[in-house]
Length: 85
Image (cartoon, rainbow, N blue to C red):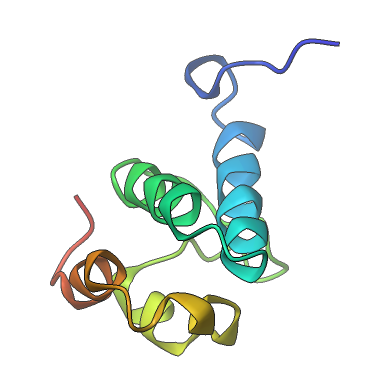
């Protein structure tokens, strides 16, 4: 089964990227996690969580799932950006 590209699935595509970012962060794959977060912060979407909130730089600073990335300069830059790009 092929995965539908994010460009063709505005609802589930971003949710899959957010899940990938979370899993990669927890598994110690910072490059993969940060690449997914960069993509996620550059597109509009409704988050997959019950609240429907998308990840924002502010939520990156608060979410404990991303604790393994806290000391990474690229993650710090994403988390400190004033707005999503």
